[in-house]
Image: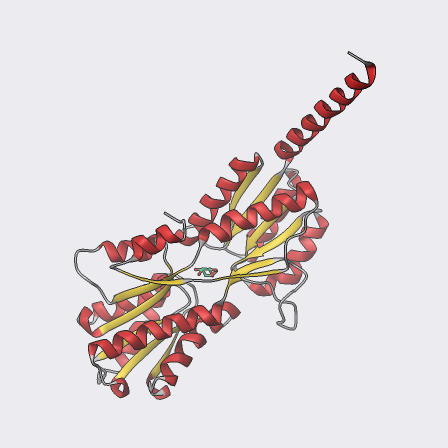
Length: 327
Ligand code: GLA
């Protein structure tokens, strides 16, 4: 073989070797605020698919408070990771998270909950993937309005349980989207009752909703909205615990992960009428892939990606999940 040919072949082999080694050396953290929540488990699952496909290592970390977030970032730095994706337990940790990431020389992306600065404004420099909160909230509101009309309830005497979590902007936008559609369709604003939750799980939502229901024994028909399926499930459980029949309750959640699916699988219909299914595949697989491309090929992700959702009920959730590729 001619010398120059040999040189080219050797160079090509070297390039392949470098490429392969670099994928193996890539380590990405995926930090979530509530590891026990099915949504976040699904995100991890799809992020691992991206890791398997590209050959990098994905480190799953649960961080329920600020201290754990700090420790997680230092730990990733010490392990030689090059970047991480985070859904933070508190968006106000934003400036601290950015500083810690920089100190550890880690690329940073956020998912679901967008970081805010000290003035409460979104930190726009950090690439983020979240849901189109207002629009998805409006889909929730419309689903409720349609079902209330179908059941022939008198809109003026229906009560709405608004399970709220106001320290999280996406939560505020989701429920505001939902209640705006209720009001635009003749739902009295005075019948929308706030049930603030201090933590975003079903148990806390149940307690918050129980207080509202007990304060309004005159109300026969209830609807429920909230940040996610867990919030709405809490409200539905609260109606059950005081003996309100399922036929008098229309709760519509957001998420479509296991908590909602289990509800649809129950032998008889509960007050959990539907959920707007969002895509853990996009939020998990795509963010992990974007981070990988950023590290391996210097391709910086888009600064803001907002994903959509689709209403599903007991009758069609399997099809909707199939359509979204999240079975
Ligand atoms: C927030 C909620 C989660 C989920 C995601 C989706 O983080 O707490 O339950 O709804 O948004 O983006």
